[in-house]
Image (cartoon, rainbow, N blue to C red):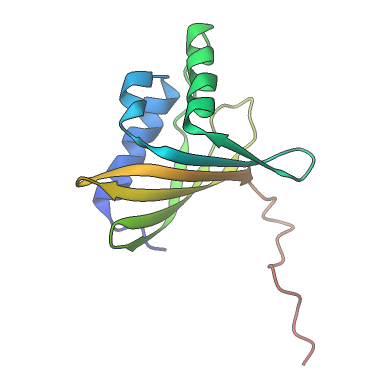
Length: 138
């Protein structure tokens, strides 16, 4: 497990705190304009949302008076290659929401990390996970 980049871990903490509290003006600085937010839909397809679409959902929740989201998360792994990085997280936004597997695609822009993309899929039942390859036959 590689989670040694303290700068990226601190960025993820700030990201969760800012987004979970619907601080839209601060969120603006944490995401690239070309953000691609990918979500596995209930019918097994991938939904792709832009920064504007994702922010509209968060803004709508804030404006409706929704309670802040939970900041519960675990950084499981970070891969860094120059000005790009990928972080894998366990994330749960509420006790009323399912836990999720998050992949954050990060880009360093003018010396600061920003989210260029997110992929969110349901957290697996670890008791049933057998691996992505079939068992060896030989």
